[in-house]
Length: 470
Image 1 (cartoon, rainbow, N blue to C red):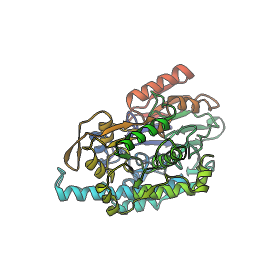
Image 2 (cartoon, helix red, strand yellow; image 1 turned 60 degrees about the vertical axis):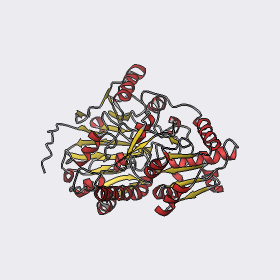
Image 3 (cartoon, one colour; image 1 turned 45 degrees about the horizontal axis):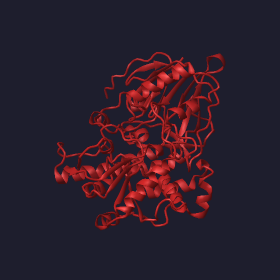
Image 4 (tube, rainbow, N blue to C red; image 1 turned 120 degrees about the vertical axis):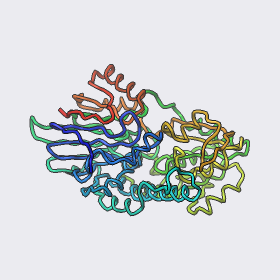
C-alpha cells in the first residue's frame, strides 16, 4: 500500500479531514513514536468530498496504535469499517454512550450503502457498472468488535505513555471533548480536541463540562463560528406547525436519527402540553431513530434536569406519535393526507426513508419541509434551503412547490458565543489554537474572533497540513 506519508519530526498533528469543511473528521497524532487517530469520519456533501471516501487512507491503518473517537456521528466515525478492513488492529476508544450508538449507526450506514448500490444497479442510475457499496455489514461488525468504552473523567491510555480523559461535550449522547497528555514534569505536553461542541441550556443533555487543564494545542470546532443561534426556536416551530395544520398539510422533517429526533419529539410534546400547537398525528419513520430513542432513555449520565421528569412520566414524545419500523408502514404514509408530521432520516436528505417522502410531497404546495439542523454544502437539504426549485431524487427531477423552512435554533453545535463561553473556562491560553470542522468563512471568523477577543494564537487548520505540538 502506497500511502505517501510525510516524514514527521517531533510531536505533530496532521489534519486529514474536517479542515476547510465540516465533514470527514480525522486528525493524526504522532506522539513519542506512537500514532493515534482522533476520529475516523466519512466525507459528506459535495461530490468532490464524497469521492475522497473511496481513496486509500493517507497513512497505513496498520501503523496506528489506537483510534480515539469524540462521538458517534458518521462524519466522525463512519470510516471505521474501512479502517479495520484496511488493516487497523488496535482499539477504538469512545464513551459508553458512543459505543452503544455506534452499533445501530454503523450497521445502518452499511445497510444504506448496500441498498443504494442495489437500487443503482437495478435502475442503472450509476455510471459505475456494477455500483458497489463503500463497505458492507460485515465490515461494520468487525469495527464494532474493536470498541473500548470509557466513562467520563476516567483516565485511560490509548498508547503507552499517553493519558487520556473524556469530558462531556453535550453535542449528542456520549459526545466528549478529548484531553491527551504525555511526558512528565517540564516535558509534559497536552492536546485538547473539542470534537463537536454542544449547546448550553438545551433540553435532554447537560451543559458542556469546563476545561480543567491548559493544553499546549487546542483543536476547536467552528461549524457556527461566524454566527449566533436565534433564541426561542420553539416559538418559530409552533408557528410552522400551526400554519401547516391550518392548511391541512404534511410537515416532513428530515431529522438526524441521533439527538435531533429525540429533541424535536421532546419539544413538540412540550408545545402540545402548553397548548401552543394542536395535537396532530406524528410519525417517526426511522428504525434507527426509534432504536436511538431507547438508547437515550437508558443513559441517564447525560440527561439534563429537564429530561428526568419527562422520562419518569413517559412524556418524551407527542400524544399521537407512532413509531414506524417496517418499510410497509413507511410506504403507507404516501396514501395519507394531512395534517400530520413525519420525522424521518437522514437529516441532510442525503439518503434513507425521507427521500421517498420528499419525492412524494415536494410537488404539493400544502407540504412543509422543515430542516432543524446544519445542512452541508452539496446536500439535498442545503439545495432546498438555498431555494432549489427542482431536486434530483432516485435519478428523477422532482419539482419543488412545498414550503421550505429552516430552524437554526435546534442545532446541536455551539454557536460563536457558546464556543467563546466554553473557551472562557480554560485555566490558561493554549500555545496554539487550530480551528477545524468549519466551512472557510466560519473557521476564519472564529479564528479572528479568538485572536482579537481572547488574545490567543489562533489559525485555521489546512487540509493535509502537519503542525507541531510544542
